[in-house]
Image: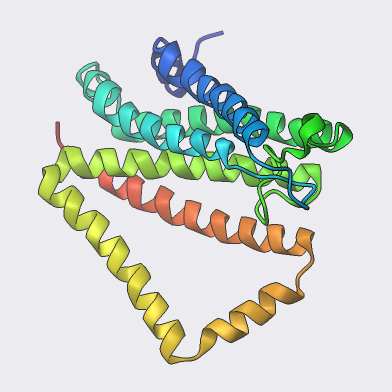
Length: 236
């Protein structure tokens, strides 16, 4: 059976196996070992779930991988006649496949983690507070969305940099920080933080995770729209 253009581009991207297949898993393993070492060196305390944050390394790696997918592979693909739309869809499909696989590992890891009492030391490596506190299937979905979001976010930054250089990238980052600061000011002036805190406080762990997952899904849709609009107008 003949491969579609999207599958062909995915295969081309996977020629760089170190970036897409090795780095995320290597950093996940490094974060796990680092968490174990840190928890062995600090007092146990009174909490049954001791979270250090080693798993955060994986979304950060996906951010870098997303940027690299533009910086290294996109110019070569375009010179071969691959359309911008095809490249964008292929990159996103690859990110979704990688994230789905890692999200499943997170879901299974949470089950093992609970069954072993946090790997015997009360460690919460996969059970990220508030974000991955729900049922295993919701944690799978949440982890998948987070990783795809970070990949697309990195890809968008890479596209902005290729199109507008360092000044454009700096302005892009400043605009986002400005929007966040403005939203925080509006919430403060409207005395909305109390209402937000009250609403979040009324949610169960599953409800809170679901609400955060929904917000992340909306953010992912915005990033996909923005990055696709950027790649269509980009010249190499």
